[in-house]
Length: 322
Ligand SMILES: [Fe+2]
Image (cartoon, rainbow, N blue to C red; front, side, top):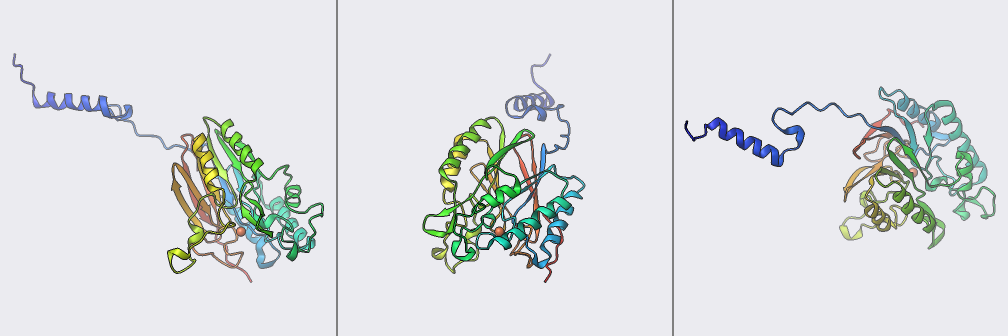
């Protein structure tokens, strides 16, 4: 009997050798099966920057958006809003603020059958601009209280379970230490401690972060200045404590994605294992049409068991009204 190997035997031994060393189990010869499509664990609709107001048919616009969400063939499990629910309470008086909150709650009550989790934006805070709003700061509903009471919330930041995921809603907006009538994007110290604990408690799970103001974004430098030196990011456009928040993400290693609004722009930025999505605006350019690349729309987020996130920005077909 010849000791020489046939060509087929040589190739076969190489294939087995390579398969055993380098290929995953499903790729070994004879083991391959077509993967079945993976369904998301949770599908949520992220509606940010609604900015409801009596003008420009904004309530009808929100109703159209909510109908669009709920008529999808693969309907989301829940809605998460991203702040700036109303056009503005920051620099407006009590009667104008009341009108906007009544419009928002009525529209959700009449047109939404899905569970909703609300986040707050800068425009949802009543009277921090005392000069413009005419408030003193001693009113019972001043600041975040009016929004919290209206939305039935104890605190502006919190976490909740969504399948095997943990969704964490942050409160992005704090008083600007350099301007008593202004705000900056920041977590207060108690909230930063809470986030550290929250991420620690979610060990072994995937986490989605929702903030009104982006934690990381290039959108603030779009369209400003004519050269790179003049491009600045103001303290109100992106979290000033971005580095500290991202340090917590790296410490715990379970944050997969962050979604934000505020800029009314459309962006995806992947950095050090976290995807940062800026998800346009339901109102586009405050109900006057699209804002740059962001038509009036909302994002659908599919969260998968392996930590993947897929984002689709859905334009719901609104035409701006006078
Ligand atoms: Fe906004």
